[in-house]
Each structure stands twice: as C-alpha cells, then as structure tokens.
Image (cartoon, rainbow, N blue to C red; front, side, top):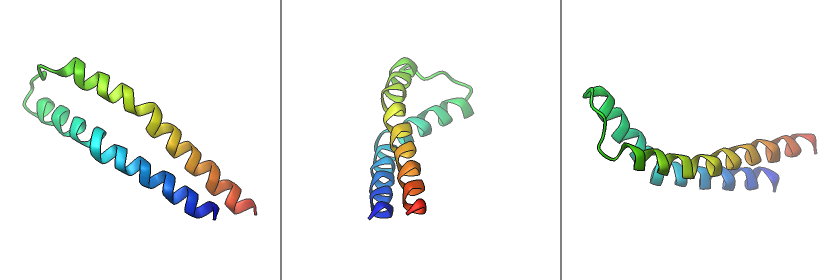
Length: 72
C-alpha cells in the first residue's frame, strides 16, 4: 500500500515535470546553446519557481513514504 502511494506521488511529479519543467528546460537549453537570452526569460523563471516547490515536496513525500514502507 505504501509503495503504491510512493509510486502515485512520483507519477504526479513526472506529470508536472513533463508538462511544465521539461519545456522550460528545453527553451533555456536552446537559448544557452545559441548564446542568447530568451525574451521571456523572466516569465520562464517565474514558471520554474512556481512549480519547483511542488516537485520537491512530492519527491520528499515519496521518499518518506518509501522509508515508512521499509520499516514495516
């Protein structure tokens, strides 16, 4: 049961990453490789900042749940 909860948390994390963080990463990586600053750099950073706490929390909860599962 606990392991399934951890998997569910990580699936939510993955969905957030694929929908929000990965596109931001691609845009910033392309700009960096082109030695350019994207015109919407501040908006990209704001989007990144808005989602990072949720992603970190989900990963932390998943690790905690897995630790509890190992102790049982």
